[in-house]
Image 1 (cartoon, one colour):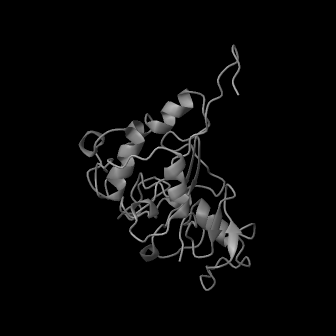
Image 2 (image 1 turned 30 degrees about the vertical axis):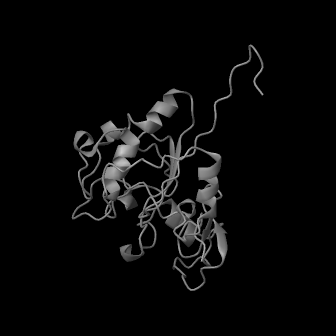
Length: 214
């Protein structure tokens, strides 16, 4: 409780973005989809039922969330077009940082292209990620600290370190996400829970298990 004359406590702000999910594919829309965690957030918070994405593709939409701009002004008009880090670094994360917040990004960023013909110098580029040491954690696009996933889709293939980022490091390490220390990926048992950077639970198949209900 805030008393008269005492400074107001800043609220913690958590932005959750799901990938490849239609806006009406949640339990609140009675489509037979079971998403209890998302439903609870919708019931206890504010739900923008008329909100639409500025672009149907991943990279432009994410760039718009970060910058507050439409695709043509920020320059990312399709997947495969990298967001200028000078523009991105002035966006949402920077606004919160200037207001005194500690900012962190966890998961799939996709502010830069993954699959390219040549190295781009971005940690999200398959050809450049080996240039970043395992203990690298930002800053990145205005976020002070990041724990990133490099290969978010099943068709991306799997690589061993150093061609990995934080999530893959966790899965192939001998620490909390140990696979026996042999550097190989074992996807035969998806029911076993492990820890990832930040302590978020995941399964051994490399999918964040926030709201998937069989």
